[in-house]
Length: 173
Image (cartoon, rainbow, N blue to C red; front, side, top):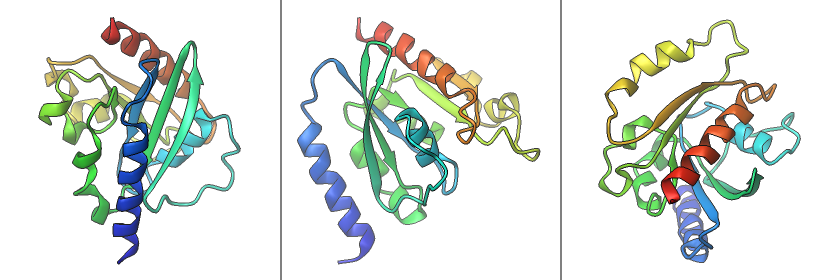
């Protein structure tokens, strides 16, 4: 059995364990392409040191407290071989971070947050350009936000978390 299959089986086991999460726990799936900064964002959210991040092989799960909410944040690797399996792990997701999956039936109405990461780089596309490229303005079935950030410096991450907390609380009511 290859590494990808082992990682997916491990992920499936973890999902079964948390499928019946307490209503006070918000499940967030953090998806994106290779080297997008997903793990750095997750590490920053967990208030851990971000200086020694390695690419995710499979997935990471961290519990994060933000305002009065408990968040279960799932960082799923962006390797091309894993992407075809993303849809299997999206049930009961409270927040989505990848525009390609917004049309999934199980995700209709789920708020969408797009972190426009790596804004500390001169070559980074501005958040407005990314929003236009993803056609975010066409999403009428959900609230959405694009948040410029730098996972390395932490700039913009808390603003994204504040948006999450505000919109998830509103959705749960």
